[in-house]
Amino acid sequence: MIIVKMMPDSVNEDLEKIKKESERVLSKEGAKNISFEEKPVAFGLNAVFAKFAFPEDKGTDLIEEVLGKIKGVSSVD
Image (cartoon, rainbow, N blue to C red):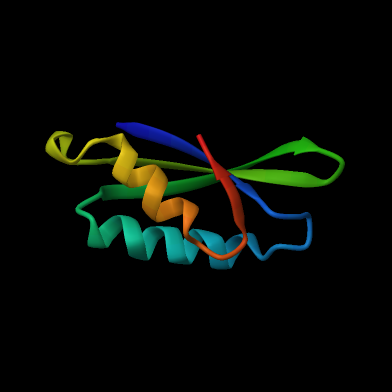
């Protein structure tokens, strides 16, 4: 299992849209059993944590690359 933390650009970002788009791109890359959790960070900002199974041969750099391109996501860890 892989757990990835995505930080939105601002408190005004629609986290549901980020989760929906994340699920779409992760599924396209071969991820399975995708789930999400929101956790407060600071000053009303919530991080989105994605948990999923991912093919070992693809590597984690690909995950950061595809999730980092999502509109409204400022960083991926």
